[in-house]
Length: 572
Image 1 (cartoon, rainbow, N blue to C red):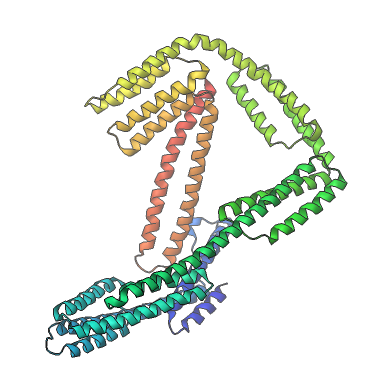
Image 2: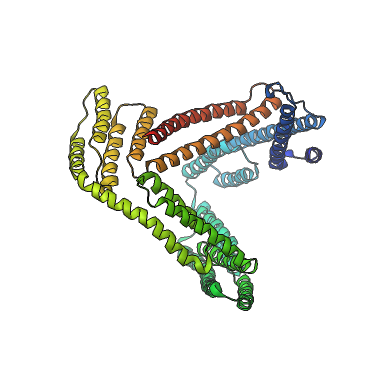
């Protein structure tokens, strides 16, 4: 690969202007960096695998690496030279344009020979047109100076009728040419090109000055008519496209419905019927290929639905012809095992632990494939085993709920007190009050299950809102609100499930950030080998690594809190 990169770089350096292939060079630079990083990591790993320490690893550049670095350097040098040459040319053009503006300003003082002044102005305008480009950040300024000079010229000279008639006549000729160009657009077939040109011609029309009054109404009417005819052509074009898309939408919808019908017929098909249905579906697939695209959103959805329908059909066919009955027997055994586990658990009174275990069994059931003709029978057995436990749990908590009504009333009253609370000027007192609110709330005891989520959400949402008003740092607020979130999980119907889900989420974030840090470290190693002196990109990568490590620390602190709560549940 390196020899290929060297060959390409040497070929690019033969170009008259390397700026023309700068993007290609950057792409090669990225490819080389990626390949070098892989090579570096492999060599480093081999070094470690041989029993060495990673920090002692040193990786010398190969002859090809040195050659590539030299070619990149030559390329950059050529590029800088060309950029400098371009900057010099643009500076020269800027000087010429300033000289032209100065000459136009001098013309503004001419009062004796208007004709000569006009002729000279036309020449200067031609010179302006033929002068090369200036740098982009100078263009607007110099163009504005040029426009002011022209305006000053026209204002101070107060052109005579001869000049006015000359301009009006010339403007009429120019606008007539624009009009003919507009009319010619009706002969084009490329809608995008028509739209591009019509913008160009309209801008040109607006930039041309006035014409003779007696010709203006007729010219303006012709211009409007030409515009209307072109826009009518565009409208007709897009309308026909929309009509075609609508027809394609109907055709594809009909084909999708036919495919869905075939999929439905395959539910209880014999081998013969399977083959007949397959031929029908293949015919529909071939017909689908002949139908053009419709609206992007509907087209993508229709294609996804059609593809999924066809995939579902052939997946079912594959199951049918590849040991269908053996698979059903295996699936039946899996589901009978789940039923047995459910029956072992359904007499338990450990409502939380057993409830989670049964929910996990239900999730496994959903993931287990359909058991064919025995599916309904097996499902009824499984559901009966689960319902036995959950009905007993419901009855148990309904009995307990009757004793929790007073707690509910107390918490409702507590919410009123909380909503009436106002902050004092003492921030420490405010913070202590909010912590005490949490303690008092938990001391009020359990409430009926049906009201648990509502009453807890009302309390913790209000508490989060109050914490937000404290004069604390952003990090302190986040940690307080996170602890409040954990309290909410602990007081929910399924605390362990919610806490484990939060722990998994934090672990995933930590892993993703560590992967990014590893990538940044690899890039940093490359910069250190290839850079000469200070490198702003290397500093940027180092800053990113520091920021990502801080994020890992924050997530680790939160995860410790979550694990602590899980351990409390296990020991309670």
